[in-house]
Amino acid sequence: MTQHSYQDDRPPARPVRLPFTSSDPLAKHRAVTGINAHVRWYQRVGSLVGIAVLVVFMGALLAISAGVAFFAARILLETIVG
Image (cartoon, rainbow, N blue to C red; front, side, top):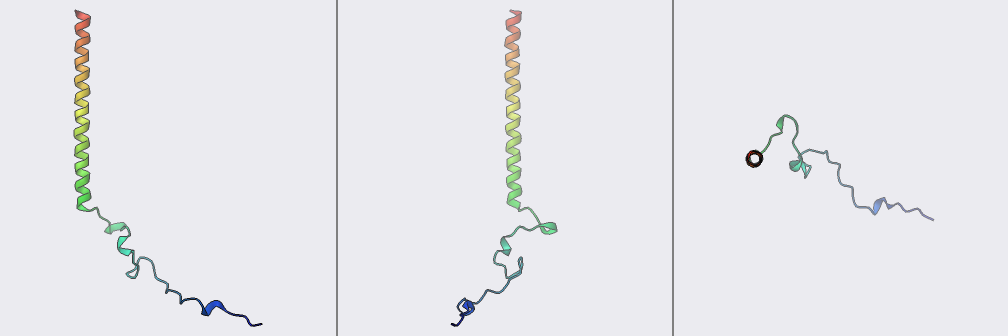
């Protein structure tokens, strides 16, 4: 009985690649960390617009609530006095 080695039947192994090198196909899609990390300009513009919308919305909400409180207090005072 002969022993058969399956080593000869397998396809050749792929060479080992170092991660995060130029031969890595996903290297350009990985996050950059450290001193080279930066925020893209359109992300900054989007954040600025988002904060502006939030500030305007919160200011309007505060003004509406103050107006409603003032109106309710005026009606209550008129009711108490009259």
